[in-house]
Length: 262
Image 1 (cartoon, rainbow, N blue to C red):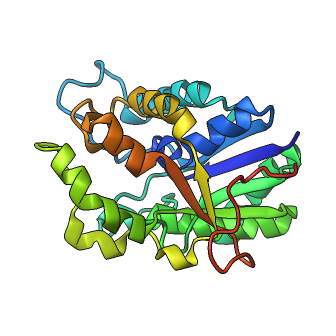
Image 2 (tube, rainbow, N blue to C red; image 1 turned 90 degrees about the vertical axis):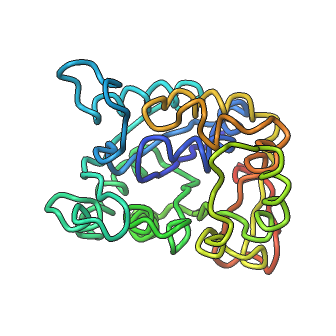
């Protein structure tokens, strides 16, 4: 058996892109570790959602632990940086934000965990952070460097399949009438072309668990959100496969299991 470390920018990111591979690894007997760079301080909640005196980060940390339990994570760690907010926001450049963090220093924090766990597999994001969010881009930079420091042999960059999105977006929109769908015109900003993807993991067996983990992040993923409101068929198309890029592999999709042979 082996150890999978899944590295993410904010609470709730883990269940969206890697929830299936995390649960799959857990059910196959591997050790699963979730590392989150920030506590999601700049998320948004409706008025009155938080209890009196409760800070958003406190709720999001609690939600992360609840979701991690659903996904089968054996350990949860936060690197201690501040949420940088969406691209172009003034919060990007605040002292202590993950975006302003020294890559080498942040990588050493993550590498310490990788070394403690003797991790064989690490998931990060692609070089655009999936969709350009500063903290997601930083996950890519920090994660790659941490793997170099720790000697982690397998690094998979979680991404979205642009061609898969293009093929399914019209059908998903028709099925999810009155649901807030992603901007189709902005599709090219999300993920990578299928030709650049080297691993596709079928996680349809774990979709119920994946959706339960999303629901655990109630402060950010409401019941009428794109993630939870769409019909099961649409959800399965959108989230039933998790896509990754492993440098030095391909061309084309050559892997279907991040933990194969371990």
